[in-house]
Image (tube, rainbow, N blue to C red; front, side):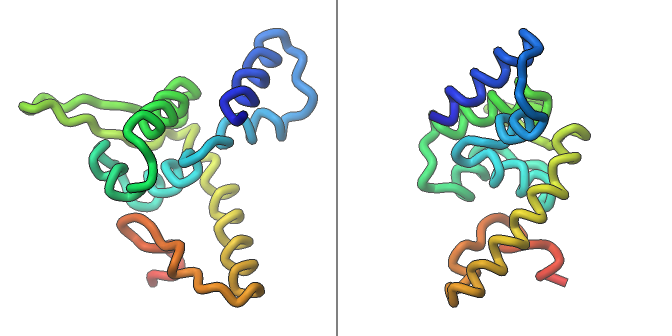
Length: 138
């Protein structure tokens, strides 16, 4: 479903028929794992593919690869192979991808507040190198 939404919005963009700028934003970040990938690339720094697999063990290799390819195609993430043997691939967020981080951070803040309101432990949802929002680690 989410891949269909992304494809639909991209086709509308090509035909200059999109309904709302919010659609474009949602299409770029919609999809399982994308927000997590962008969030952690921004707050933790670059990642190798195997680190993403450790970060999101419930995501299949195929799913992560597809979402990273989409983020790269949309200009939000770069993929840089290193000249090592075996070849390691480094992923980093682009300046365009970085512009989405204030939105994603606000989503994190809202979600954390909602979890607190529901009396759920937000630490159960911690992922990544920083384990939570950077402002919580100061």
